[in-house]
Image (cartoon, rainbow, N blue to C red; front, side, top):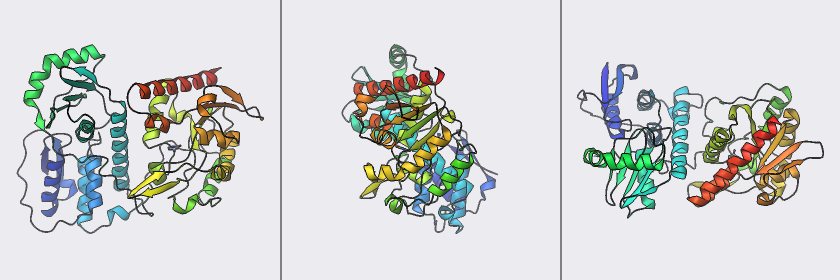
Length: 429
Ligand code: URA
């Protein structure tokens, strides 16, 4: 067994060098062990051509930032197979590939969430902020964050590590497990800054999550693995989902990857409706798994609502977008497209019969109420449909992502959490 010792959880350069050398030396995945820290064994000399698709290397660069202990071996095994000539990126049911893709998506969403929620306070000449990311995204993310404040010293502290920008170079040192409040953080920083800065190391050029975005993906890019929140067996819903998969009621099916139907328990007390799947939802085939979904998850948690207990869907089941260079940019659905898709939303609503129907944003409100809705005027009020259905309008989480960062964004986010808490109250009333 070969033991590879990486220098840190995000030692991308070390992983790449070891992977290249060991694959070329013919060391099978089962014969390689990966650890972080500890003495390094010398690597065999790498000779010969190394033939692995760039997209796989890009995927590995993001997935390696996941807080998943088996990721180094998983990614090695994919590279090993690709080098051996297997078309691993074209195997839609491959569990290893699907796991790597899920890890990469989760990393990207976490990196985005960190950039959205990280708050700074003044500290000495610079700014100091604390955040606990779910994955090891500090290193790659710090490269993006410092661009916002190029001329101010910046310290970003996380439980795993801290990043230090002095205006010219970015270095990484020890972390702080918890910052209960600003004063604790500031005091900790004042006490330890000298030691941390003296020991700080250069970053290892982890790929930036944004730069590695593979979009536009080829149209036949396979859907990712198993659904986490399955639709509970309800024959009517299962049949509707199957039928909607081939829906051609409007032109949006032409460019979208797939129909993204709702998901959640069929006996859910609350049904959340968004606008339409986004770029990531379109590829994965599940609603609210991209940045807006991550923000919604967080707000639900703060409001005391368990996402696994809700049914969540969209007014329109196909992604509408326009291409800008390589990127697929969201375009709002037209009233006609919303109306054409209404049959699926009606079916979901009738089968689930929720106690409360939550409409997030103008398209969802139009889809159910059948009229234009000024969300800011009508949000937060309980209303009833002619059939007695209780309806609650609030903003769409994507709106919160568009509000300029800072106090305004925090205020809007808190107002959204308050709306969700009001929904929870309606559920228990
Ligand atoms: N926005 C939506 O409205 N729905 C999704 O599923 C994702 C983003």
